[in-house]
Image (cartoon, rainbow over all chains, first blue to last red; front, side, top):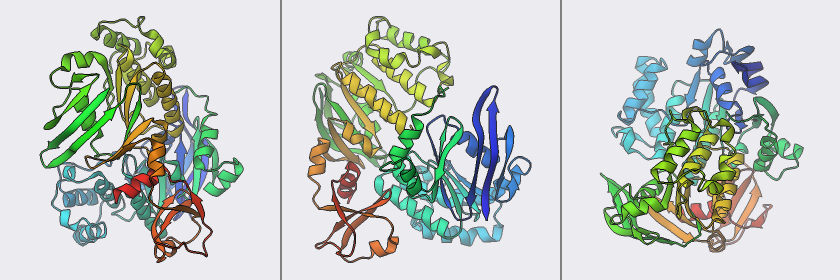
Length: 245
Length: 282
């Protein structure tokens, strides 16, 4: 079953084509790595898939809904975790969970038990009353991920979720991602760490608004005769001709 | 060139820096490597006279960061982690402004920034707020350099930047080093460590180690092996012979308590700085 489908998805701003007719499909339960240099069009593409920006041309389906005409339904069926985690620093740990559960429309009688279950799972029960601004970055990260997936979305979008955290926290976070995927959740993730590209089932690499490569990490390494994903990325990204603007 | 003695700093209940001491030599490209919250920015703000330490002393180019702050500020360049140029001024106006503040002109030290600035010169009439991340970074570096500082402080200049642009930025730093400028740069990316002359690994306000990347790698206490990550995670983690196992892309990096697991296809490898960092975090 396809959880994400993009068909010639395009976004233009004036005469600038940020996303240039990209097509791909993501299967249920897949970890899909969405790579590209700064300015390649990743964020714009991701915003369209999340129903936050209307495509100029082409079409896309996420969780079975049209991203253009059913954007609100798309939003209800996905989870989104941004780089900055977007937690409320002045709310307590449990209050953040409560707030987002409400925003995502989780049934009221389910929120309380599910909150306890979630906090226990990420070892934050003892910190339930701590203000979010007082907890370390690694904790914010796992809290943010749990909040983004609290309503059991089919798909979770993770925008550079591991920036700035230490190497152990980074690896523990990938354990969480893999566990979620094993439970059937589809994971769409961007990252600048090329070793993390290896943890994805498949990886796409965007250059100048187009998807220039899409395959399993193993096949990409073979295709580009590269030692690792970093080398694959360098080969492709160096081809970029678009002047950053 | 930079001398730090027993510097400590706390914010409310957080100990941001715990008795830090280190020396950076003239002309060195010195890296401070550590995750968010390690204390990198606090250290840089103390060294640039923007923040007072609770205790300890620090000097840059022979000038005390507290007593001689006025002269110090003339001799250093600082690129903060957060973009802090004037968003409503154009590229050229920003550069002109910083030159004027330091009583110099763009022309006087143009040779120093030429390589970097010419990449953004086609956009010199664009407002700084409208630039892409990569171009902002180049403009900020140009502005930090325009008064020909003796020491340059770069606080996480490559955070959130893609691998190709990161490499280009480090090539720029290597070039600056040949001009005799001492550079202190912080980064959360472990792979950038090997591009520095010496590095300090930092975590929770403490220095884990200070040395050349080669020496830190040579001091790794165990034999390190890699194995293709085809086996189930649990199977690797629960093997009683294994001491540590961490995924590095498509490979496991493993150390063993005593004997290696004979049935696994292992290859002894040289540790990366990330292996060393993880080992020292324990």
